[in-house]
Image 1 (cartoon, helix red, strand yellow):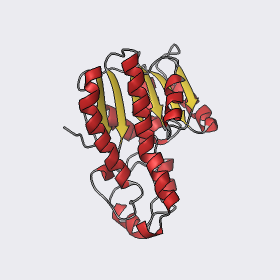
Image 2 (cartoon, one colour; image 1 turned 120 degrees about the vertical axis):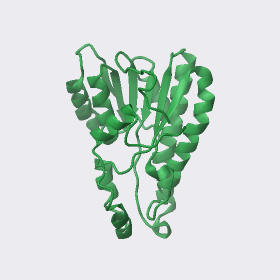
Image 3 (cartoon, helix red, strand yellow; image 1 turned 30 degrees about the horizontal axis):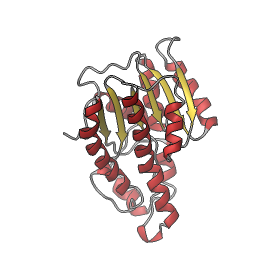
Length: 243
């Protein structure tokens, strides 16, 4: 839903909050933006992972004057997302919603708990974070705020084994389309990112429950590293864009 750099967006000096920032795509985005001079706050539920991850972001920073911080919060709830936003040292100019994860399996074998977890992990994290971020940006008069929602190629299609995951990625696409036309009234632009396979710790976890037929279908997709996907996200490459 738009190349972040198309309108000459420059991260230097901006304050960026990244959920799911302790590993995978979120951490890769954090490190990339740190090299470009952004003040970065990473967020996830696990503080031990955050402590390790934030050191990588600090090491990648362009200048020692940049603020590189972390916040431990569960953004799958509205209260948790508000904790993440309010815990930032300054109101974020840009928020990347990278938190999420799949538990592949056949529909008839998934439990109510599996589906509830999918809703919370893959949709509610984006919804709650976007809601908290948009309110903070509007209330504080942030100029040219940006909210980036990470969906998936499965936000455009379904695939055997992903009944717990793909519907949530479709929902993120619908949320992005709705917010794009509404939040423009507050000077906030909304972007959606639709990557395919990301070779991350989350992908390795997915493969533990992934049906054989799903693995065979995905075999043609070699995947991309989190760093390559982060570059693509910022430059508007390697993914589909909504008009």
